[in-house]
Image (cartoon, rainbow, N blue to C red):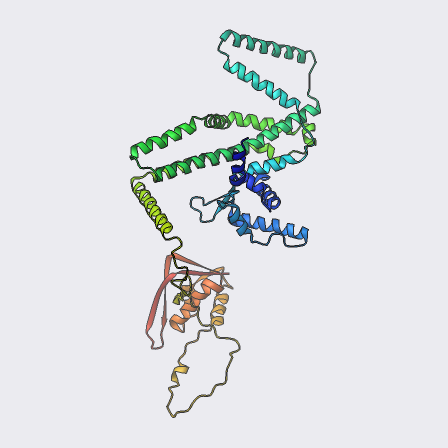
Length: 478
């Protein structure tokens, strides 16, 4: 490990920054409980903020004082910032709520902290056997001499025949409980490590995509040369050891027979007595489904990045991106030229960030108070006659009377339309009464409004003329 490299990592690597943070214990405990323990890939902002509120509340209750005064959303924004990089904040397609995913570096830090604890059981035999098995696979898989490979297969066949003969004779060799527990713990650790690998693969694909976008924005050559360079990198990442290993793993996991085999093996192992004594995590029984879910997230990430890259390389977007980068460079140059020369006094002030709107349709209908408040005022008498007839021409619709009409109609049926109601209790006050019926349908009564059907209501006005109104079908229900 190089000294300068470690100094740079201490300053820039998210995992090291997390371990050196003042609130590292709070952050690590919360992120482990929210993401690692339940194997949760992504969580919405509102749900994660609620979980953090509960976590901070329990910490404050235990300490008897406020240890972390900031709001939960402020902590989440801080952890997802470029300066921290412990969470990845993004917006899923078609969703306007931010979601969070655990960064791969954060998972590495949490795993390191978890391994600091003293393990109650450290198995060595199973790992030694794993080393032997891997070495045999390497040697056998790379042997070019057909006779040597045939000899090895015959040796295995002889061992299998000898084992079959021993079992037939009644000599069955079983693992002792220690060996069973040791191999199970190693299997569980490897299975959980696979879930961490998916986040690392996902991060690598996103890093590649970001590098490609930066390459596009700063490219000065022809578009054909750019496409050749970009898709060459895409093929290169697929042909790397990591890409080939992931593709082989995914093909193996997608096999229905392999899934059934994993299910039956896990069921059989978890029923063993030595394994039950360990009280294993119940999620291990469906760990292969967690692999599938995590792998699908990675596959969707690759597909989404490819689609975004296709749109990004569109002719129109190509020109727009080149123009945007040129404008940004011009702004940066002018900002550097004016640095230290800008007057810091406010050059413009506004009363508010947005105008306040008062929509006429937002106003509710008039409801007279039960106890009107009358204030005594002095009215000047200047000898001018005041027309008082307008005071007696005001229309007041008794809403209680209309509600009583609806309830009486519903005493003999389950529902009644506004048209039937108007025929039983004729409209007396015209449009004002009709509008009150509409208000009751939308606010105070159980009602349904069907815009696909309509009905016509009629009534007589004060002059004896017949009036009509066509409305959507309104049905009041009991």
